[in-house]
Length: 298
Ligand SMILES: [Fe+2]
Image 1: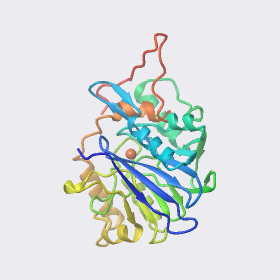
Image 2: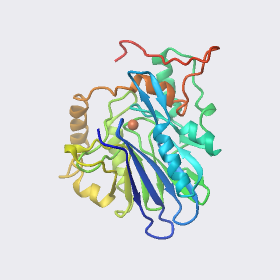
Image 3: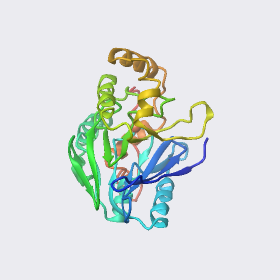
């Protein structure tokens, strides 16, 4: 397993944010801090809480690394963003939003994902508006102090996935992966390869110089973890889009690839936490918390 890696992407001028990425090796996720070109305002994107499947233990360790960076750089957290309800790890958004007194934001369609999973878990309806301060729609703007994030609905990997665009930085979550790895899977409940294709087309309308920050990297061929690439490079070299790929070809290739992938180890545990912004299940009167694992569902 690769180590935790931190890398910095500098501002290229006014309106171009500074971006730090921290690679979380257990899930191959990248946690981000996006800060104003000058000034302390920042937003956190997709912070991770570790869940040890064997021990059943949780730890905010990865998110603490992010919090240490925020402190080291003297930043002020103005918003905490979850791009989508993750299937492969527990989110840490709620914990950090509470710590910093910052709003927790995600896509309004998280409610549809919650409705789906409430059924799978046979649990009472989850009201996502209780757990998120901002439920965003396509075209909305999220203000984070002096930063503004344009919200683009980019479904496919999940039906609720958002991309957040701040100046020349685009946090595209699980749409593009690095060019050598292609795109994210679209076979989870509510996922759609056709919708993912549409989202990839929309993202390609951004300027070619856009810095694309991806949500995951699995270190293809044993290389070091990578997560930043220009949109021009995505268009030129992405293995799932290059060579004149069309929608039907993409959908067929995506379905073929997804059929070979095992479900994420933490998926059944993670959704019940992530439709609540990363809050663990409520404690019982003894202070004990339990996850619910539906059997033979998939
Ligand atoms: Fe994901």
